Image (cartoon, rainbow, N blue to C red; front, side, top):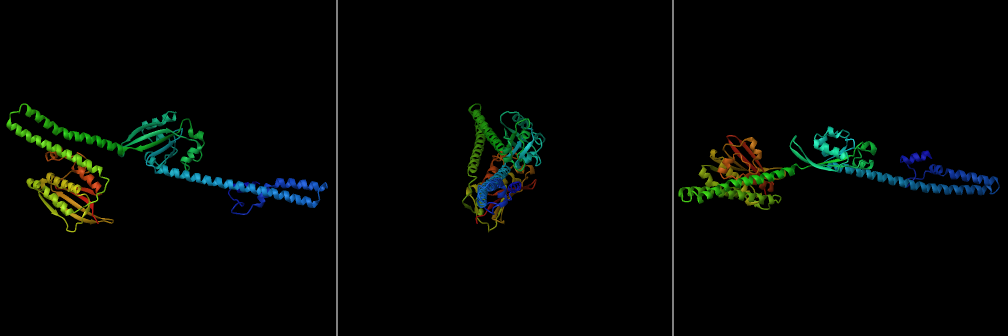
Length: 457
């Protein structure tokens, strides 16, 4: 009987749907009935109640019935064991899938037991705790006092805590933290991390406190976007406030002390016209930027002839270039293909770059526009470069050139009609067209802006 049970537990079955019956096991199972029947029939034969033949026949009949019942019972037990094994395998497989899913989540997840030790962490949490943090005290891996205090309050029986923390190293990042009581029964823990926790004793896991689950969600991008919105409103208000104040002041002067001063009136009206044009340019750029952002996710469907586009831009800036004594030259290859894009938006891009080169690089007295066809592995790109020979741009300014209202020299920019939005508009248009822009500059030797766009082939 013990041999049979051992074989059954080790899964070494010789009875069932895939093999013949284990006769010795069945005999051992029915041995009590067989022995009792043997004793009864021997006694009846000795007492003369039955003949030897009928005693043997009766014993075989009872034995066959006992073996049949044992066989049926054996089949039922083996099927139950097989079903339990299948269910266990499925449970382990699902638990493994659950752990894999937790490791794929971008949010950091950490499970802390009632003693303050880390029971489980997913892959995203390793950036905070390190990869060998399981089994260590939470206070040895996290340095944020507010987080540790929240965990301690939850372990003492308080409700879930939600708050934000900030990390400044290696870069500034913001996280939304949720600390909530956790189920630490053996079944629950095994389901969370079967490879780490194998049905531990609940008392030793819980310790003297309540276990806690930490979830850290990165909200850095949301914070940055919110800050950008605040800065944008502040900058736009500031840009509009200055010309409005000027116009308002001149109007009051013309209505008062300078009412009959012809010379002052002409001078003030000229300044008012200039400030009004400045506000019009700013509002126009703001509206343009807003429209482009609304359509930034929609790829353009049209095609644009680059040579014709550059010709139109040069025609538009020639009067300004001649006034400032700047020569604009164009050198484009004859085989430039058309590019995918929106004519008006790309015209705005090239016009902005050439206009900036003329206005801010005019000390160099020349601006060069060149193009090139670049073949890459998957597609052919058309590059267009605008180079000036002016004072150039310091290296620290280059990464911020496409920020809204960012100016290297605010006074010079306003003096030359800049709104601080031109390159921001260029960036968003290129994003919509799947293009990119590279800026190269050498102080004292000028600046080169190069844009790359996909050809229409």
